[in-house]
Length: 106
Image (cartoon, rainbow, N blue to C red; front, side, top):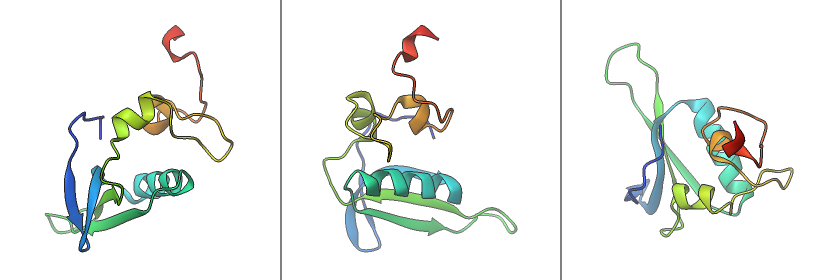
C-alpha cells in the first residue's frame, strides 16, 4: 500500500487505533508489527477474510497511539530499525533493506 497522508482512526478488535495499512499480506503485517513494536507502539492486527473463494487472507494493521501517522513518522525520521538506523521511505515500503541516508541522490 502506498503512503496516504490521510489519518484514519478505526476500531480494531474493540480498540480505537490509528490505521497504519489495510489489505496487506501476512509477511508485510509481520514486518510492520515488528518495526512498530520495536519503536514502542502497541500494534493490533486483524485478519480480513478473502472476498472470493481461494483468495489470500489480508490484514488490517493499526497502533493504539491515536496520534500516529506513518507518513509523518517516516519522513521526520522518528522510526528506527533494530540496528538503531533511521527508517527511510524505501525501507518502510520494503523496496530495499539498505537504508541509504542520501536517498535523493539515486
